[in-house]
Image 1: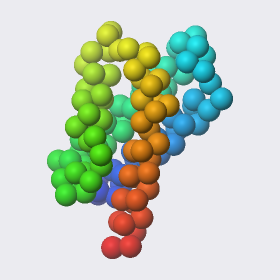
Image 2: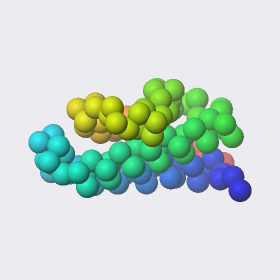
Image 3: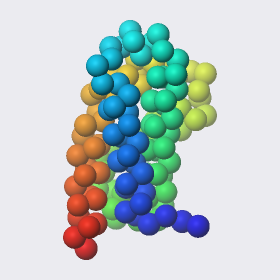
Length: 116
């Protein structure tokens, strides 16, 4: 059973919000020292990537409005398939530096979906 585009956007948004909550008040050193935090953040990135992969497949017109969609999906693939080579600095950098842009895009697309 497939999910609606709105549900997929919502799933990605919830995962994004979780990452922000998980890393709030944390430093990169905290991240490195806490394997549970690293696992939790990586899992939420996997959820984001999976939701957006499904969105691209089922509603490409909506998915293509998300900046760097291909990079987000590729990031998920690295986390899933190349887990032994995950660069913690890269994951942290994405969480701190790129995630806000994604959250803004998801908020906008969810608001548009509610209006339609």
